Length: 161
Image 1 (cartoon, one colour):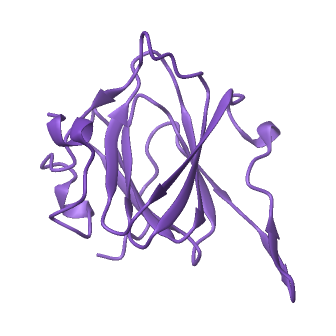
Image 2 (cartoon, helix red, strand yellow; image 1 turned 45 degrees about the vertical axis):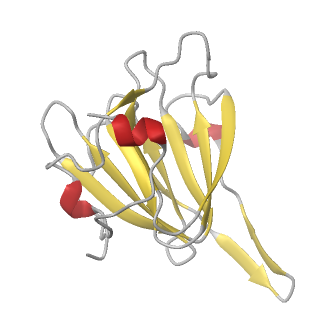
Image 3 (tube, one colour; image 1 turned 30 degrees about the vertical axis):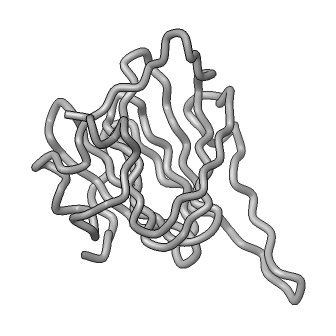
């Protein structure tokens, strides 16, 4: 499974990222609000070891996510919960693309290598009333999209139905 791009789901956007490299390394602009459908309010950063799957998550109150893999390679997987349509794409070092994810789509990613992953989100996290719903990574609509069938999962993602 290459994780090649499939048809975009409703409301999704792919934004190619340009890297400018020289002998020092490289520079890349990762977010420009004028290109996004909505402004973001919080930025989160995660490090995941190879074999980790984070998700699938979705947000009923309207939080959207803007995913950027800063280092390594991640497979982004989305599920349109209404139509059952899916989308997957490998992003990161070899394919610098950012992905706008409408929060009503179930979404997650797999660390194909160790990854540094950035999430810009349109709502601030409220620990008293979180808008974090889950669907199992092994849901039959998406299970075939992952490269692993024995992922490393959080307790919350392990319990998702």
